[in-house]
Length: 415
Ligand code: ATP
Ligand code: MG
Image (cartoon, rainbow, N blue to C red; front, side, top):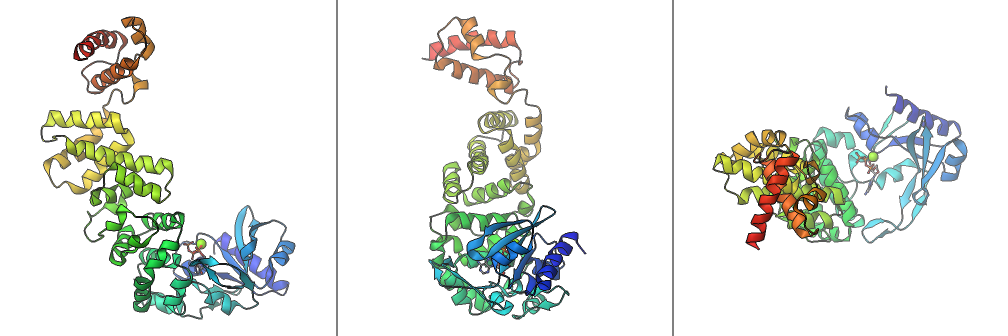
């Protein structure tokens, strides 16, 4: 089998040879049993962190407070964690202390879902005390133990529940679902970073449509710390194909568009969710472009191109490419069809898309018009950029400068 798995099993065997119990645990066991690609290998052992550090030449104490040592093999990290029981849960998230124990069973008991609570020993024997494989075969995602207690201990598990159910195409077992609906108010204790991380994994997962359906059905987002426009989500009706949009940003933009959020509302949600500045801008620009295009009258072909090109100058080419793809999903009316069909070609054909593409600069304007620098320069350059982008002017020095003189006169008259 996989070389990474061989390395992980080698670590398990070395621990065994020194008299410690050790197993592959968690996601890698689940994914291997389901025949899915394994992302990373986690190991649980009776060895204490100090023992693990002594035994292996290359280690990093990545999570010493939870008993985790990372062992490096061929530069690949393997997380080795001492069997533990979790002490009191603090503020509905992560335990305040951990207690090391010497048996696997209790370590598996503290885990969230039955399919995540399986272990594999060095001989490949599966340890599955809560019937994880049975549940998966029945198409069920189920909490280990009493679901109400488990969600009460750690509210993040509710979002993990929705993520895993969508990712693995499982139904949430009835008792688990009922407990989830009951405990949702505890989500207010979860940091927005963690909410965002889960949402991103849902959006990047194998079935974002199903994840959103579950978020909508549970109304989970109504209970997070900050108020979100996304909480109005109604996952039921969506255009087929949206989940296959190639960029996560486009998929987010799609949903804000569906919700009828404007750029400000969208960016506000994204900031509350601690998305990066770059993601926030990228998604916000798509919404900005969308509303700008919708505000124009796209029914007349010539006007449609003008609206599109001016939006491209304002919101940037990437936002417009995204928007064309979003329109391609809908095609409800003629304007949407035109944006989807012609938008990309109009972008291709743009002779200039930003001030730096223009064949003249502010300095050229000052020299030609012999005027003091001022706010007029930016306005004038913008006007020239628009005309060049629309193909009304060639992007060459002398015609641009000639047009600048005329345009300047016009601006003076208007003031
Ligand atoms: P993936 O990495 O694909 O999300 P995973 O199962 O590896 O899946 P991790 O978050 O990496 O998920 O956690 C590893 C294991 O630790 C889980 O399989 C589960 O057994 C346990 N675990 C993680 N988070 C929690 C939690 N909040 N409550 C209980 N157990 C958890
Ligand atoms: Mg993992």
